[in-house]
Length: 113
Length: 116
Image (cartoon, rainbow over all chains, first blue to last red; front, side):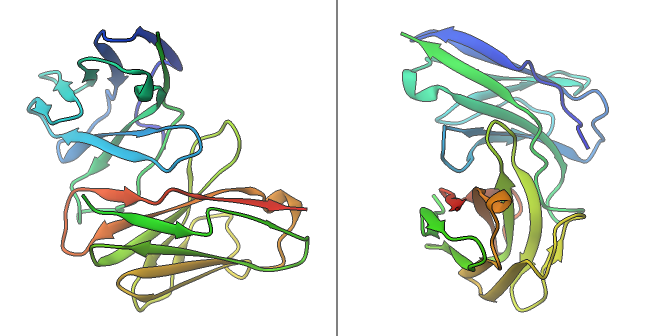
């Protein structure tokens, strides 16, 4: 069921922007891109999601390419507390299919002091 | 934001005993809750989907008689691991979908189960 590809790990200096890429070349027209993160020994935390337009909230920005085959999650000023595994998930619009989320292997982001 | 709690946060039990894990949506009603399992250094794997007032839907390979799920109200779902064995030791995480909501699942903090 893996519909996304992410690098297994990344490092980022504290205070700098963290840019996490995700490839989803087989994404369908009605599928959204969701990002969650999981800090060690905690439940996943919702970050952001989008369909085709770029999105921004208080946590992050989501940049989706025009062909929608890839996206980038941007944490503008990474802190040590942003160290976590970040999951990029593609799923249909809510209510149009299975509502469960398929978690791949994600990217382990380490923010370095 | 929507808050989901789980109880207990961690539990140690003897092999052969049963353990119940509660998942509650604290400030919203959830028509659907999901139960996931996560083994060390692995990703989350969906075990079952729980709908209020109806039987849960289990994923392939998950024994419904071993992992009993009850979703009796719009704010509470329980997972009971029956006759637990050491291989059931894992991190169990629930999530809840906002009733009438369309976008987001909210996750609980997880329950770490250790079966001796």
